[in-house]
Image 1 (cartoon, protein in one colour):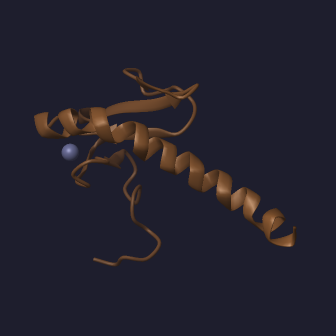
Image 2 (image 1 turned 90 degrees about the horizontal axis):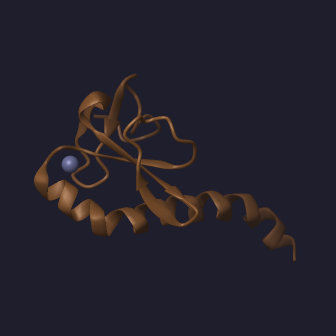
Length: 91
Ligand SMILES: [Zn+2]
């Protein structure tokens, strides 16, 4: 029940559904990645880049269609901002 630090991938082989936030075995989750600004399914789960996982719940799949572009964009944005921030602060 700890909320600090170990959240997403604390158990090897398990991932969190980005829609309902439930942790599942990665074999039952579908992976999506953002490539060149387009969200693509990654059936083999081995594409590079920022990935998002969605469980088999029909509602999650449905919502993921809308949510994934934003989820993945936010993740990329955050990574970029963290990298840029120290520079920006100086300027
Ligand atoms: Zn789900």
